[in-house]
Length: 265
Image (cartoon, rainbow, N blue to C red; front, side, top):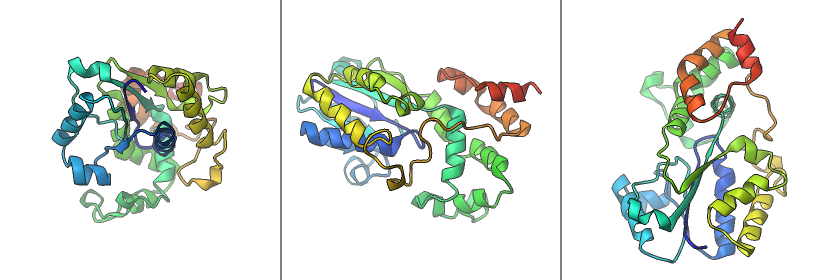
């Protein structure tokens, strides 16, 4: 490694996948791996605040003992322009339509603690209770557009685009069985020679098109070929258009043809 590596994801955009890939890579490279998201033990006990994140990144910029830093909310702190050369970063973005559908399905059964805490805005119900109380899937998609998925989509669209960062699409990487995009990704991160081979080995070990068995992870709901949105009704499509048309365009995605067709009916 010749620089620090920053890896960013969002909820339902491959966070567990990328965490496992880069943790495995850090072990192969024998470098530190830091998970700096606010819900982590490291953040709560060491960083403690956004200012703590900034101080941590500032300290990293002053050392050549390089590390891999992972943030599953992509809320990296401030980095001075003079320190840009010490970092390379990537973040994953996913089509907003897929984020909505995947979130709606996952939140109905997931055991993640935040889904099981009573919330005032749901009149004492938990998030999972609230979404499961709805009459059908379209109502759940619309619920996600107003709550968790909305935050994810807006965060993706408003990401601060540092010049040393590059965005890769979740869908593209999920289908990258020839490792063309992954090779580009690791090249961007400054890996060379055997480092790239070790990185690709980590991808293979932790991908469902490689050694990972789909049923071994409850987070895996799609193989990258799932067509989301085909069960959307006109009301759901209209709400998506109103809330996320601009964000979808900002992220460089287009709506699938079947969504366009339904919108014109």
